[in-house]
Every structure is written in structure tokens, then in C-alpha cells.
Length: 104
Image 1 (cartoon, rainbow, N blue to C red):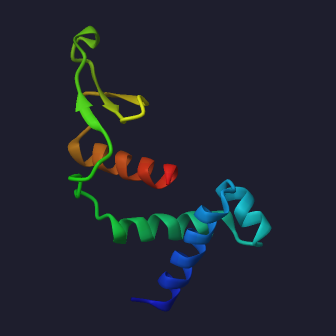
Image 2: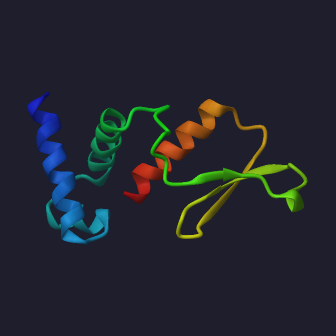
Image 3: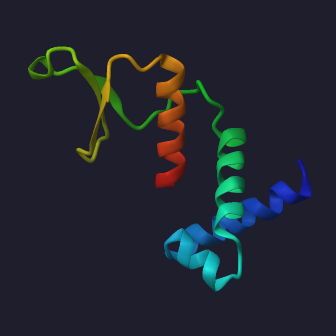
């Protein structure tokens, strides 16, 4: 694996351990937040390839009161995300991947 990837993995792990919001962490370490975000996304794509949804931390549910007009992703903690039915599977997978990245 690339030395640059390993360096950014270490930085991202340190950010998580710090407990600071990512922007604040970048500010304290004199890192560019857009660069940090780029590498976080890139590394997450390597570590959790798109389409590998076997371990997704949510369940897909439809609710009758929505008249099949949308889907809802529901996490175990009760958080819900409503999405329109017209989203393709690929768009939904991309959205879920981005959410996982943003929330990690």
C-alpha cells in the first residue's frame, strides 16, 4: 500500500481518537480540511468498497403512510433518512457511502 495512504490513515485515526470535530482537528494540525476530506473518502472507498452493503448499519423499510413515495433508511439508533423512490440503486449506494464517510 502507498506510504501516502498509510500516512493519511494514521492522520484520520488520530482525528477519530482526538474526539475533535474534523474541521477543528484540521485547524489544530494545520491541515487543509478539503484535503483531509478527500483522503478520508478515498481511504473509506478502499476499506469499504461500494456495493459491499452486507455490513450496512441500517435496514431498508417502506412505510405505508408514505404511499410508496419514498424509502427510509433507518439506523439502529432510530435515525431515519427519507429518500425518493426514483433514486437508482447506484445513487443510493453512493449516498449511503458518503453518509458513512461523513458520520465516521
